[in-house]
Figure 1 (cartoon, rainbow, N blue to C red):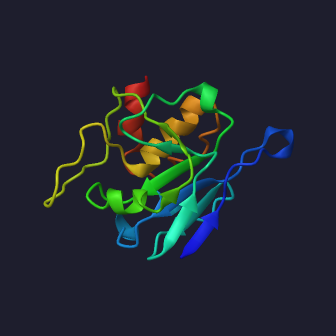
Figure 2: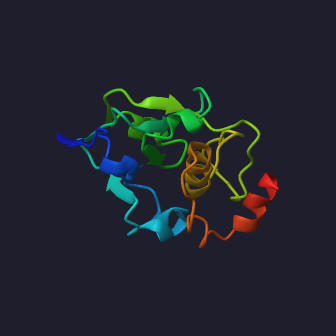
Length: 161
């Protein structure tokens, strides 16, 4: 088994470690809202191939059934699991350690036109790039450039006016 150990360790001067995105191998990059962000120095992308494990101790992992993320979580990097909702349990099985589970506010609505023929998506679910944007905003971190190439940016941001 391949264990990626990337637990949080504070950086000098309060700088953040990279946020981590773990993708399911069957996630279609052509439909992935995070794909335009590949190569940014503040994000690291991993693919959860068979045997992949990630020690998420010290990371904030977004989860629907958890307390809402706040500025109190500002010192921790984010862990995003990027897959369809149907395949999400397989990605969650790759996460080891003790991540801090947090959710996003119930009032948020995705602008991404979701259509699944095989399963129902949760009403509270957001596109991955939307979730990353909101999580960083709630932590009081920069969101600069995250939505620049997101086609539904204006529709999504309208709910914050």
